[in-house]
Image 1 (tube, rainbow, N blue to C red):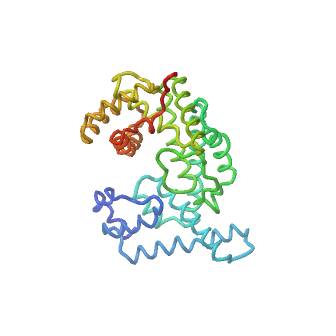
Image 2: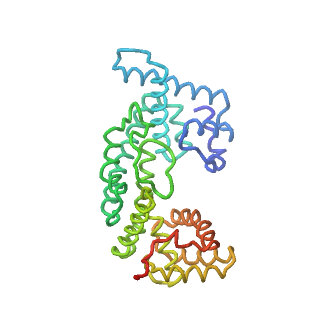
Image 3: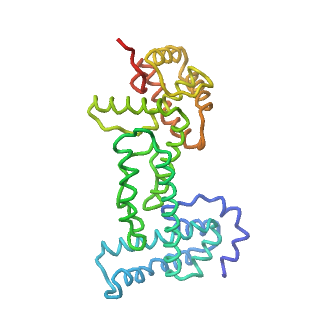
Length: 324
């Protein structure tokens, strides 16, 4: 194991690193050099070992009939190889072990093991899809329902772990509030996890109230001749304002008067004070993944504060208009 035996002396520094999962193998080697586990010549040798594995993938792709392909196809296959190797090394959840495996195992082994790891990710996606369908929003928009009923299945049918693992053959047409990073099935898993977090939040409220908010958003989109966007964000906004007006009450349905009252009350605060009272209201909301909701809340807060400042909070909220 030569230089890798020095790992124990650098463990704390190594564990503190922040690796880039999108290029895990490369960043692992770069960080290993930084903390002194390997030198630059070893880094170059291990990189060359992985890149030379392209010949194995080309042979499998061509079923042994060719040793060369076009440059575009070679780049495609190399990206898939690296994605598979990254997937396996990430699955070890241990930089030390990942580095040792990278040195000791053949590229064929790493490639195959990556395929196994990605199949587990696919299985996770299947479970997440099931839970999303189980907790789907009542009377969701067309793109929301088609994403759940068509897009994920189409992705699974088109996805190629061996020769296109880094690709997104289908992008779900419905967007979550936070855009998942990465590519391939790993990105799909993040997307489905985000979607489930949003769905579970909305399921904390009365179904009829959620339906009314969604119906309002659909109607508003039709009036504006635009497509319906994310459905969780308007529900979060309404839940936040309801919680501000009625602390401890779990509602998302606002009346036109509620919106006017909220705007009048919030207008009495400075922006900093408004941030504090709305953060307090947010902290009273139900949550199974507060980190996710907090990121969305932080994205929405400046817009809400700005809307209050310009007396158009109503444009950001779904509410029941007065009956004339």
